[in-house]
Picture 1 (cartoon, protein in one colour):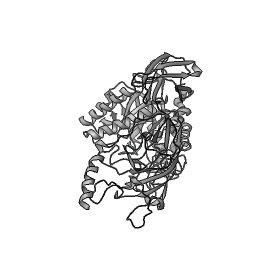
Picture 2 (cartoon, helix red, strand yellow):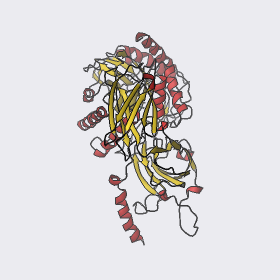
Picture 3 (tube, protein in one colour):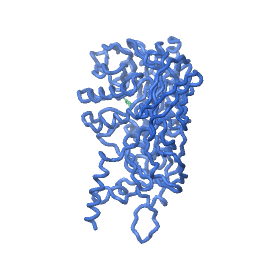
Picture 4 (tube, protein in one colour):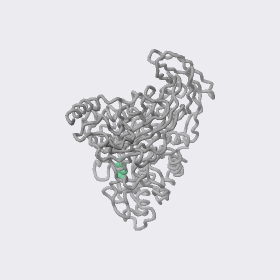
Length: 603
Ligand code: GCB
């Protein structure tokens, strides 16, 4: 008996080994404006630290795992799981903040949702996930759909032939175990929230449909619109139309045998700027489908040390943000929670946000676009990942590609960032140079950046001495003068010099303070220390050559298991300008005042 099951398991193992695991189908963009059915809500769950629902006692994948979602009805048979009698978790949502026993949990949780569906003639159906952290293995009606890796990007599987009339069952094995070869890797300064953290839906499309499109101004050309559409289906040669009614633009296209067509035409829009975040309705029509989006038009370039938006120099008055909700401290899952953070940034005088350290949810970018906030978008290539591991590279490139695919029509994104504080070395430089090339291939319009690190040339003189800076469009780096390794007064003595003639963005600076804690200016974690550090940092930044933007670390206190000082940190990185409960610290007003001055200067 055991022998038989073992042979079977071996062949199944081969079938399931990662190289031949079914991949998700190409990403469908602009999901919120398509016909879809939400699968959000309470899902049944099983906590499975030993992956009992997946592996047998020889640690080989099983045929009858939890993915089969069997009802426990035959009481004479042995079944050691039952979704029906187990607990629920809310989707979307992280599990850590929903149940006390999951607060620090890293491992597998099985999710199950049974739903009713009515088959529709001539429709294709896709199962879409906004994001699952970190690895998802997905089943529909007991059939394995495939696996997805990466906790912050969307994926979808076609289920047209598997979904049935009446009741259906989705099971997802979600695993957020950290791993050395993963992106991010074992070490990071944020909470490893597990779960189906973004929304889940069924997308219904015609047999042939517009899967993807691009509509943006041509690089450096304010009066030329370029774009393309990509169809998916069995009749790929079709007539499509791209229309911007307000600008009286109507482009009729004929797609080729690959379902692709591109266009270029002249345009005289009112340009998207932080002060006038104008968006236009863009309609893409195919015989029996109309898809709408809202798109803004702007150019973004650099010239020497300047960043030019629509040809005019701007200063990026920014702040860093983690995708963590105000007041309740979990992964954000609603538009309202996105808006709370973005409004705080606006209140501080920002026109720019650095969405650290991974792709945030799509609404975060869309809401920022409506509010007039420029965006630095990032992937979690953070600290020391496995630079020479080809699988790690593939993983990073896939996350980058999915992020750009999803957000390439958002006018407010001006920088794709490919890394944060990575150590110098040849393998790392090759890895990141390849990623930068990939960005430019996918999106020739926007700027490429990375949060690099500072170096001391000699006492009192700092610089960035990183070969990666030659590959980047902006000279962006993190610096904690006055916090790590010194007291705030060091800011008064430090000057900066750069060999590269590129716009400088200080992508992080700051220090920690517990809201309401007061004391001397050299007493760590008091608001007084943090305020003094910000005053001195701003003065130092004013002396920095080529400075074109700053994003202090960070808008709001956020959860991090690295921050263990009891009664002060309590699992929070306290570098927020605002506390986790929404209280503004004194340093917030230092930034607000400085940003008001800069705003006047750049009018
Ligand atoms: C950094 C990292 C950021 C950390 C921050 C800190 O340089 O980029 O992820 O949270 O410093 O607080 O130390």
